[in-house]
Image (cartoon, rainbow, N blue to C red; front, side, top):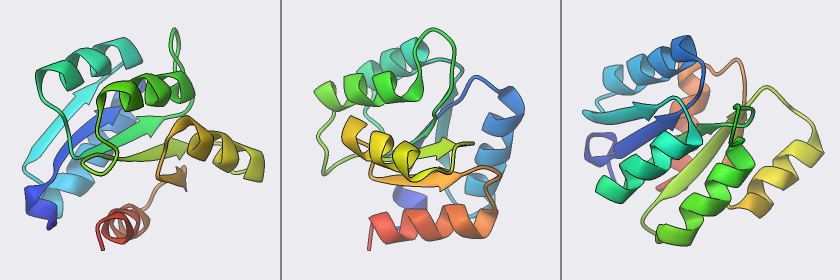
Length: 125
């Protein structure tokens, strides 16, 4: 799958982070980018149209990223949608938690364009 074929959903309660990720993706050629400021809003968007990639923050109010990922995985076909957790936590335990919840990869903030695009390419190689 090429970058231009991706349908990306960014889930982060911090608007500047959503804007940064959107900018990186759009500059790389991704044209279908949606975003949500909460897990609940993201689940509603998934119900409308399933994404092929989700970028999800770990720490969000009301529903954290781990809970969101677990709920999203209940409705999404794992092979059709990849999930990258984007977290400020860089511990091994945080990575294990993300994978157990259903994430395919973990990126640690701050996220560089190079790291984000490399992680995406690795998931679809």
